[in-house]
Image 1 (cartoon, protein in one colour):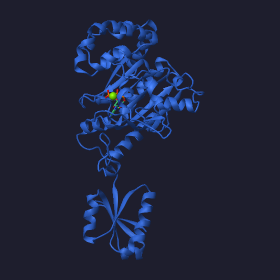
Image 2 (cartoon, protein in one colour; image 1 turned 30 degrees about the horizontal axis):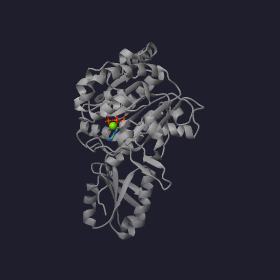
Image 3 (cartoon, helix red, strand yellow; image 1 turned 135 degrees about the vertical axis):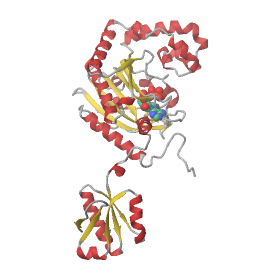
Image 4 (cartoon, helix red, strand yellow; image 1 turned 90 degrees about the vertical axis):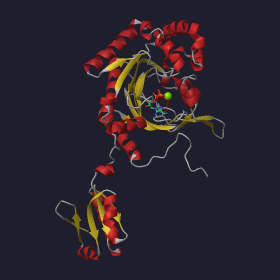
Amino acid sequence: MATQPPRGFYDLLPPIASQLHELCDTGLKAMELFGYKLYQTPCVEMASVFDRSLGEDSDIVHKEMFRFQNRKEEWLCLRPEGTAGIARLIATHKLGRELPLKMIYYGPMFRYERPQKGRQRQFHQFGLERLGSSTALSESEVIQSSHAFLKALDLDASCKLEINTLGDDDSREAYKQTLVAYFEPLKEKLSDDSQRRLDTNPLRILDSKAPEDQDIVTNAPKLADSLNEESQSHFKKVLVLLDEMKIPYTINPKLVRGLDYYSHTVFEWTTDKLGTQSAVLAGGRYDKLTKQMGGATLQGIGWAAGLERLMLLKQEINNTKTKTVTDVEPKIGVLILDPKAQGAALRLTSKLRAANKTCEIYEGKANKLSEKAKKRGCTSFIFLGEQEVLDGVATIKTPQQEDKKINL
Ligand code: ATP
Ligand code: MG
């Protein structure tokens, strides 16, 4: 029998497991202030949900999806990202009569990648989608929400915003032609992946991480020069609104995002504290996704954050483990000195929990109990022996504080 989970998959133990939960909880509360609501899609979808929408040639669809067949020989997959599933959910439930739709999701995602620090085969994302408007205001507000999310986690100062525009369909088509004309004579020097992309989606070559592509990509014509007026003025409006909110950004002309569905504004929050896995949150605008899934045409913009990378970043900053709820909350140890006090201990802890107090029962060798409770983080102690049971009253002892009485 295997004693390890599959490569790239991990058990989550305390304090990481609860940190992950807290991160989602904090994010959820911060985003509810913007009027977003939680939706959840299943971890397994029909593979077709992702194949066309993300692009057959995207890294995810091309090599990172966990695909498998069910007994009917239909192709299913573990979801590699959240947006396509949310678009499918919108089509399934015919959402979109009341706009805008403001949706949050979180949970595990799965990608068949080479595992390394900040890159797993199962990881967690917290994401958000806003559908039903295409204005610069809505785009800026979504970027503002990503900033608010990082701020709620106290990570905004450690990340910086990179932004770019892919323009509208016409601008992108014009740019593709310019790019092909530039790359074609240099084809032999490009990585194998980029050579293939030259035929399928030349824009994606700009996203390449292959060292042999870097110089060629740096000198490539810029998308900004192919933008039509409408796309240019839309992007300018987004930037002006970011300026007004005093959210600093850098325009990164190489930021194209790896998926087919994006248009207009794309953005990433990156950090210089996590080495190569520098992107902690990424997003952008998409216009055709919900229609592709068989629903109404809804323009959308959204983002997703990688929670493991955010936790690594938090650790990097604090250089200590972040405190969990149980570390922070004072914990009461209820120490049983006589087996007759077992019932009283169970009743008492239930009463303490009803008053929102964290508590644990300890039984065993009387002289070892306090030590055991202290080791597990207890800061107050209640000793329960025969006398306490008879009296119906016990004492809460907290070092450096006055004793308190509590009825059993
Ligand atoms: P990268 O360029 O690092 O591969 P990506 O562009 O594939 O990232 P997205 O699809 O935009 O990532 O996903 C959003 C976020 O999810 C990323 O910014 C990152 O924080 C996180 N993420 C993506 N893939 C992984 C992974 N394999 N393990 C852990 N986190 C991940
Ligand atoms: Mg990736």
